[in-house]
Image (cartoon, rainbow, N blue to C red; front, side):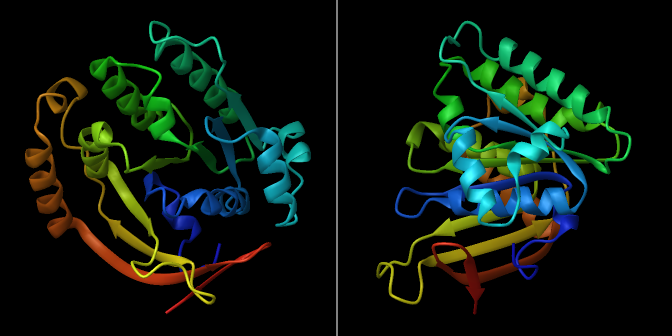
Length: 251
């Protein structure tokens, strides 16, 4: 990851990535994994959208052997089972994450833990119970209290699903870093694939899951704007060019 875009210090708290179908943010995930490994964080990789073999190939291009990282417990993959039902969620998934984070914390030489969920939107489709879903999001954030050292939770969301707008708006309250990936309005050109907006702000976790589920999207947006105006640290927009083996940022 180009250090002008993200640094190791950004892997603290919630890092929220938002994209749309016209330009997926999936290209950022291997680089975030590389950044976390460089920062000596143990990674709990929740595989929702892409397979382990996909990340093996993507990380190989960055000079990282994922198989070796798993063998040394630098990366602990967690796979969503096809038999997981709405009734099981989030109980089973919470148990899986808790077990993986406990395993990650046993590495005494690590600086901390990074939980990376490659598609929160796909995960949301596994349950119709909004209270359960809000509780799961709170659980991901609260893992900071049970892990040792630095803790980061990286979440990728897709904003094309209208039903997800409420919890995405709510989740933005907790994000110390937001990355918004957008295609150019004029469409991709030979030199530019899209644009990336990176915003850093102070931590803000406003309310409980039960309270949040009762707020309207308008109220959440208003709270988010207020929090951002107080805690905003930095906001920067750059252009990106996606190559077969790398990403270039400029502008």
